[in-house]
Image (cartoon, rainbow, N blue to C red; front, side, top):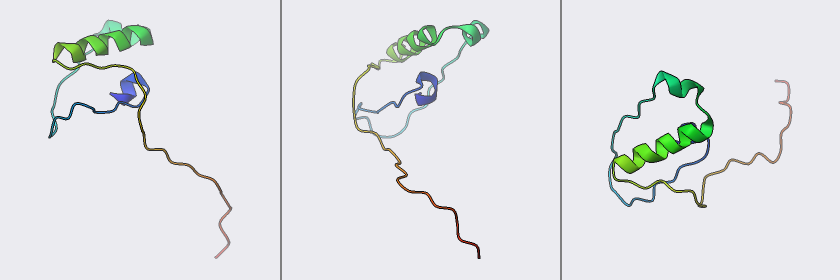
Length: 73
């Protein structure tokens, strides 16, 4: 879901295990605005009994603080 929403998605359901579901887009969605796609995803998630909301939370981040050219071998 992070790829579709272009932001991290955190699982705060407390449910154990993994679950599969299918999200289908129509050909018309290819040219839809990102706001239309986002609202479609929110509606689809609601349709399977879950709530997807915007918020803040911890995410893993990789920070590179120094880079050097490799030395010749």
